[in-house]
Amino acid sequence: MGNTLHADKRFHITKGDNKRLRKSGKIPAILYGLKESSMLVEFAELDVYDVIKRVGEHGVIDIELDGKNEKSLIKEVQRDPVTKKIIHIDLQRVKENEKIKTKVPVIVKGEDTLKNYDAIAQIEKDEIEIECIPSKIPNCIAVDVSYRHPNERIRIKDIEIANEISVLDDLNSVIVSVKHIKDHTSQTETPQVIEVVYQEDITP
Image (cartoon, rainbow, N blue to C red):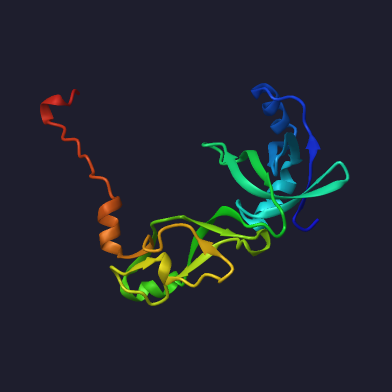
């Protein structure tokens, strides 16, 4: 199947219709762009998860619909706030050699080496906005924190990004901070409330 998703048109758009659709193992979506009419479609749920596992939530895929393929950018993936299951997808038609803007997730590698310094990596900016042709969109942007020390900050300008990709965010933006474990713990811990029970409040 590669990075191709088979789509079927859908004609019912109420919340109840979409709920029934999801119960049947399908995910509703909308396809738009390139000055063509927007189209309501649906995909098999398992196929969607399989493709997103390979290309990410902002990747480019081929939509197979009515016997033809349309190259599309995954513009937005909506998830249920509780179950985190995908409930809707927005897709934008794209041209193969035309630059597009999208956001790419940031991941961290080399975290194991930070244990030597009792440090951890904290992602400050989880996505970077870029512009390039569809075939050059990376699944993610990896930030190497190997042997970094506490209090070091890594900015967009510090990481290697392919020449074919233009970064639209501020190059001075901090994307990852290396923090001492104790400092991180003190920021995330909430004060513990201890209830004091006096002897006279205890009934036999």
